[in-house]
Image (tube, rainbow, N blue to C red):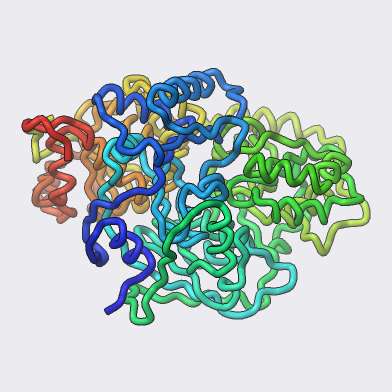
Length: 610
């Protein structure tokens, strides 16, 4: 039986054949730390006395907060600069743009290569047929020091885009259609491979858009087999690599066909990237602002698509349009080709190249009650601010900015929708404000009282909001746990040391932030049991030595305060009040070894590190 794309890439970088479920030590071609995670990577390296394996493969990218407008971001960026000067590490500073895009455009990795980053959308590299993975601070520190990381080979799903999209459909509309099919966890723990004529003919920018949203489907990564155009682009960028293609007899865990026949412009409603409908279904919704940019839609072609809508038009009165190209090179090309003039004449605000509002930096956040159309990849509550965020393509976003309401590019009204005096607006704002968003020898059996958080798809913004990402002291993190999860904002005040958290499926989906794990350590939580975990979150917890276990307790009738005894080695979960035993997933050898050592970077009794 042949191999899939991810199996071939991992095998080439591990030095042996692999199959799904195998754990491989994977060589990493490019190892990146961003500004919010970089300071913690530095801290891990310095506190553990770690060397740098190959400084030519190690990079900092400051893309979350270009300009360092937040003091903690500025401090973390400077910590990284000083470390880089001392260790000979390259820095793509605040004037360069989004790290994953730079990795492609600057030739840091090419088709068939491997990259890890503290960016949960490092899987954008699937656009060029490379393996990219978001990882936590400890993983990145380990990769910087050893040049490898352990990785469990995921199963692969073949995703066939069938049919011919409608003339108004864009790659963003196609990936939203995929989200409507897979939802938040349909690709959980899997690698996808796009196929079909609609996928094959996509240019690099469209592949980037679609690859960037694998995370929102729970996927490890989604690949496009690299086209001749993509391979040529990467070679011109300076990479000499060997593209990987699936064998004709590759074995897939599933093959899914998603019809894009006649596809029309799509949009995701606020709160969930997978709550997808046709734009026509929400057309006419009055909006306050529009954001065009992010790693999903910040390429030059995205800027051109927006400019074609905006040229000769004005942003509707009272609407703020914010535009942020992905990289400085794209920004400069927009300037040279007259796009910046078009944006400014239309009334847009331009920002420095970077992530913008998606990472709480620079511009792009919204306020309580504000309605935003965004080209980003996430619209979880609180992710891009305190208002409502709709996800759409650059064409739909630009058209809505002109129309003053949600519209398609084909239905921009002759006169824009304008705000009318509304006495109830003050009450709405007040309500929005009021609501808030507010070592060795460790035991293998855990006993404690439970907290039942009966909810699926609890993302890392709900667990630990991005406004606290600059916090590096674990002792300070506990106070923010569940601070953005409705009904659980007071969790840090009532949880006790040794307590157990019980929750639903896909726990910890979203970003790669280590703090979403460490905040529970800060509170003394002894174990987290979920039906399933987000892929990056699971790695972060295992690597931090934080006990987590997969088990379905939804039908166990548990209530807050019940006592459980859990055997980490066997997976047996004993319910104290009834004495019945429920089967969970026991710790793997890798998880147990890391747990017993107290974390991936901890020194073992023999004085070494795995």
